[in-house]
Image (cartoon, rainbow over all chains, first blue to last red; front, side, top):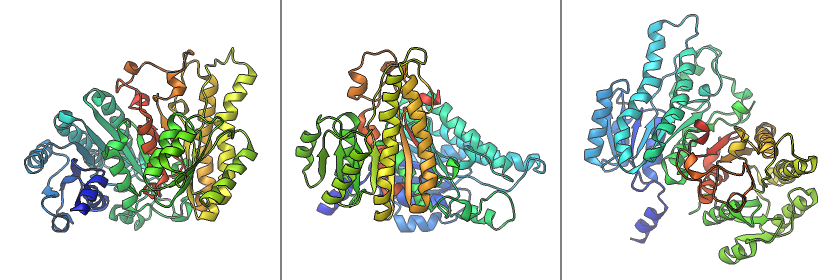
Length: 256
Length: 247
């Protein structure tokens, strides 16, 4: 009994109910584990089944609800929020994590390919924030948009991705101002290259998108857990005066 | 309660204001801290509160003196061991305008807010390298991101501190030493609460959150950067300003 009590005392996200997009692969898996370890309950959704069902087995149905859903569809967001409310209660954290980063240059990208990146990375984030605001307003909350160092500088051969991430960073600030009076905080996390299937796919294709590891000040990529630690910090009440800002997790890359 | 367990930290300006909260947060989460300040302030009281095995306070040391920094690092090594965390927290505010500020007042602000953190970083690097890496946290300001009227010297010092943070981050990455800035907006500290000079602070209702930050809210960002949770963060700013600079 003592250990249970101590556990509750040290859990930084006790009482938090988080909606997470793109929770079935890459960084989303790491965010899910870390949020739940810190005491949160998580409504995770993803376009693909991925690691979703295994995570439910691992972490328990009382902690994690996994749904299939598309961040580009407002009705999928509404469905996730409704299912989450029914299972756990009113959400007070949103993590807009789903994203894609296909290689495209300005000159060669088709309008269709451009729109696809914007739809997922940018419209998806917008729809997520809009869908969660009524819930978050009930008792205050924290929105965490996973942006990128591509929202601070630019990278070659990632034209639509860079556009979408700069937009996410801008929307973060605009939403922070709009929602401050409701006690809703909105921040962006800007990871550098992180060891996920998404970045490994870029690394496997010749392009100018990925700096060689030797050119990184830390000589290595970030681990997903190093990004999840920032997500936990922003989801917790420890960051109660933080809004409209970026947490840059890039091992000094953009300091250059 | 052990997010910085086993870490040894040095905090400047530890005898008043925000410095007290940085020390409390670090000690609560398992660190041992050597704090110093130009005055005694509330330092001795904080030692009584936290215990001498957790907090060692050195009064009458100035951040503007390289020999005082050497003394603080030496005391730290003797008392607890080599430091792996430095919080450059000491700072002063003077109401100043470009046209009317005296060279002396300008230099005073630059000495404390800018030269002080430079000397601090330089003083701890050998010890941090010896400790196998570390985290340097420079308490900057929203004045390092935008400008405020009647803040000329302060703005200069904080932009310089933000720049030094990035330059030091690049230089020290190979040694496993991370360097980041925390940029608070207006915070309820004696520095702001007790000043009636123009340009010191904006009223709470002029902020998106309708209030100033509390010192504890800044200390949480310091704690995050001091811990290994921030292990891939370097050269960046953690903004704690309640969306002020988003406007």
